[in-house]
Length: 230
Image (cartoon, rainbow, N blue to C red; front, side):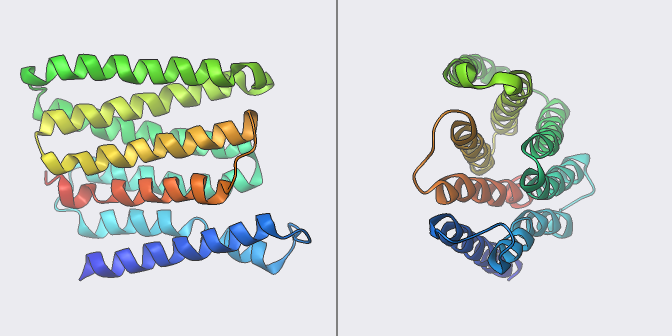
């Protein structure tokens, strides 16, 4: 029952936000002071807030893992607000979110004990994550300007979060843990699209692509409370 209510509320708010923001981008006469802009700004952080609340209320124990997940999702809420104020502020807040989530994944992996069987696939996956980081930075580098260092740090952290989620999945040996890994992959996709939009070239239907993948990431990450039972 809780999952059904959460699903309906989360995707209801997400759909309304994406619809309003998409109409704003397409409307030639829209300004930042319109009522729709204010409404969408209020709705934007609510899904992340719901995700944090969902994990907090349904956590099976007071394990640091769940508390860190709640904190990471709460910082996503703050990032949603901050990025509309200033891009760099949003990046910093999301950086904190990703750092907290990375700590959650790594610390729980250490508690469980890293399985030796997972060492080889983890090595291969490390090469893949590193390749993404290097290629993405090379792609954006010519147009980053003063944002080169912040974007480098941000890309490093989100790459670390991706690898940490893979580490936890393989260590825990829970097949459904792939949902959380998928959540991180969608997070990486959303941030990569945002970086391309901000520093390289405009995207078609950017709200659907950037926000859609971001909210899907938040939703899948929140399901950790159901997937990982510690």
